Amino acid sequence: MKFRTTITIDLPRERMIQLFDNAATMKEWQPTLISFEPISGTPGQLGAKSRLKYKMGGREIEMVETITKRDLPREFSGTYEAKGVWNEVRNTFEEAGPSKTIWHSDNEFRMRGFMKVIAFLMPSAFKKESAKIQERFKAWAEKRG
Image (cartoon, rainbow, N blue to C red; front, side, top):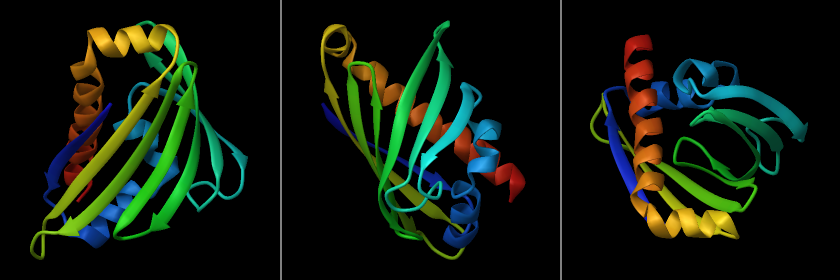
């Protein structure tokens, strides 16, 4: 399953990237994030692996993030692997004038086992959750300015 979500952030790209590229503040705009634990490499840098734990729908979900491309301020991409799910996310950021940034998030999901059934029955849930993450970041980042 592949899809794209897009949002416009009312901040210059440089400032938006400063806020986006800070693992220490992730919990402020991702309220379901329980923990972020580096496994190898420098967090946020090419090749780095980190363990992320989320509380979603009353259950804990653990995933491993691997940074596959870091070309800021243009692109930040990675894979996210959890039980039965492999997700590749390609985030690109483009300037839309001096004070706006357009954030595109291209997602590819591959499912196994029970998660394949969930994806078949509720494919829009994955796109809605991805868009919700962008909306939370936008609200948080614009308040921080």
